[in-house]
Length: 101
Image (cartoon, rainbow, N blue to C red; front, side, top):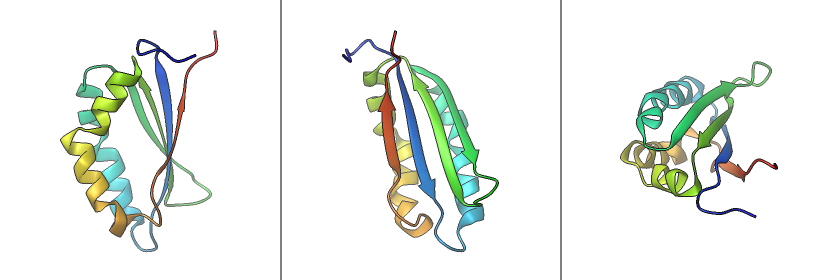
């Protein structure tokens, strides 16, 4: 059961549109510092698949769902999402997880 005070881990998967791999890399890396500065962000780590350039997984850890929801409304993420249709081959796929204790 998830409560508002339960820590969450988010796994976001995204794929660059053809020819946009470098732009997606720049954007993914540019989000790290602002995300880490947000209240409730425990970690924010983008990974690129070495066997599929342009395929990314971002692993995020937040103190609770409210902190993650605030991140979704942040100006830097809003700007990235606005650029998404031209940079990505489709919308990011997110999985929100809670640790089983």
